[in-house]
Image (tube, rainbow, N blue to C red; front, side):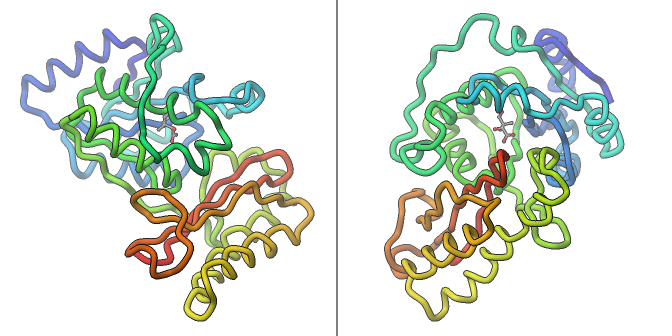
Length: 281
Ligand code: PAF
């Protein structure tokens, strides 16, 4: 595995590979890699001649300075995991390499970022748009891989690719869960043993709610999920929205859309966790 820390270095290497007609896949990450990321890398390795993984904690998508400072940075361990997963190239740039000058671009994601994470993390998706488009321009991949855990982010990236006519196929990959159901996340590293044990209530409640959806109204299920999770004093639901899986807009009844997803954000102590569940696929 080659490691590049500069944009020029990576661009030069990729130019040579492209001239040899190699197909290039990209997995953008912020590091602190876990089995969820590795499932994206595995798929990228299987489907492309060259798998590029970027590890970059993007400051423009953090609306909270403490969250940015506390975000885990584990580059050495990440590099070892990626080498083991047969990744071809690790791109680990500095902020200056990605943003030689401040990025002032403002993206229009229509209604997609006017709800859920967009409301609770103002500016977050604009920052995601900035960094992902920068990575697309640098790497010029044929395919790019993103996890379905960040469900709204995936919808936003698909829109950006369509609106800006990037010739890139976006591949959404399923959430990877621990044995007990907890969705894998780099933020889980920040949970104490006790918090981790109690946080499983989030996914377990979501799973039960899918069974309830057969007999209960959407509003009943939604309220039940919130109440059930909040019963544990360490957990605090920031929002639970049941949405049209394509438009991300709230639906009021199970009949309102063909595909329906529940998206949740919960504070477990000080750690902000997100998860989602499909009611109608
Ligand atoms: O999902 C993430 O880890 C990040 O938002 C991404 C897509 C790597 C952009 O920084």
